[in-house]
Length: 265
Length: 357
Image 1 (tube, chains in turn cyan, yellow):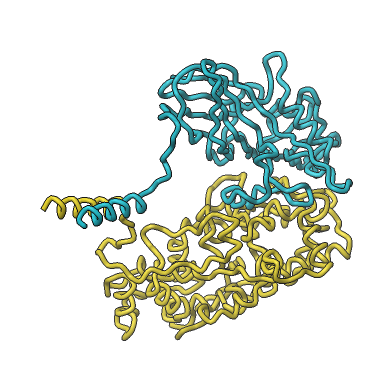
Image 2 (spheres, chains in turn green, orange):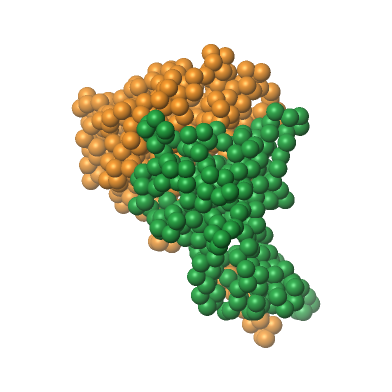
């Protein structure tokens, strides 16, 4: 009887304090930290740089940045020794102006070793399900994309002003989402998220990886972006979304929107 | 004996591991009160923000409600919080500017009060100068153009009242009244002011249909080519209908009121004001931070044709040089119909939100 009571009490304790950490996988060894930095062709961008008409894009327009918020997901580690793939499956919404989430530690621990590391800009179609993430629904007044544009979530909101070809100050809203064409029935959707390959990285007990975004590259290569033509109402513009995808995912001559920065151990 | 010790140890561990932290500093705990969270809120967005040092309680909310409607918070006993935040008007003031006890008018329209527990950024007032609901409630009592009182006088008045000391005892475990506890109680009451039962909420729940006009209005609201309201005012996945962020929405070329910039001192924020929720517009006229628009039609006309440029205008304002996107009359009417579907009769008529005094 005493044993039954003791077992009952122990069971209560286990139920009451269960933290879902139980796993049958081998015990992982360390987490990996990521930091996000931003620049315009090498000039660092921080809060004081916003709202200043201080940049010139590849097409020659003088422009500012008022808002830069973007989503990354599926940070993935592929072990070079075992081929095992580690993916926490979580995501990070970075607000550069507000300085929030500039550091991110995926919720996964991996054995030390050599890995190929990558992440996804935005959400791929598997993750880009409409309205299912409470934190993203709550962020920025709703990080969602309307259902009339295919639903899901924004990948990036890059906004600001530029001087157009009549010397008038104009607004732009470079919003990257899944490409959509609502003129077809059903709506045509194309996954325009992309994987950013950071290459081989040694993961130790306290590894930190810097991910750099060169904002100027969004306007540069392979599509030289003309803000006089493409400034606002870009979310329902299928071709504009493809161009954003191409500019974001293109890596040539050692340059691109995203690159690996400093890795510290 | 070993058995008893082991059992005691297990229970002790359990208590330590699972201890909640609701206990107040003086060890007193009032009756916990859960907020009545609408199902759509629970499904779609993060939980409400309740400060650890001011948990909701039955007694605290009752006290806060009594205080909110009590004119004795003002210096001459003529003006309660509810005097400028009227339940029938979604807790705003139908006058453009509220008038204080000395007959002086303010310069901004009183803000409507609901769903404030979901203000994740925690900045209150049109300019965000208050960093919590408790902090917000401190200001009007001593503002010379509002209640023009002192907190010491308020505390003294309430301290000699026949009911209040006992109510503070029940809510906070002390009969000693001060501004901290008064504002805590008011904040608890304000957090119960939840609006989540509009026609559009019922439409999302599948229990009511929208008219064709309201449905087209929703499309105008969500269409980047037309209204594009959603980037600041949210979407069906965010039942708050505001981003609670600060924007310059193209009202003026120059600013007599610097708004957010007056608080931060940052010229990049001159003329920015907090996005108000679109819920309960049927009851909350006039509109904008200065109540300049008496009708929703005027508001829609502003975004459609009335935008004016200023240096800090938000990039989301479209075709500013043309005044806006020039909606068709039909789209304007439908947008208005949709916006009105976000109004919640059950909120303004909720008996729990009326004057208990």
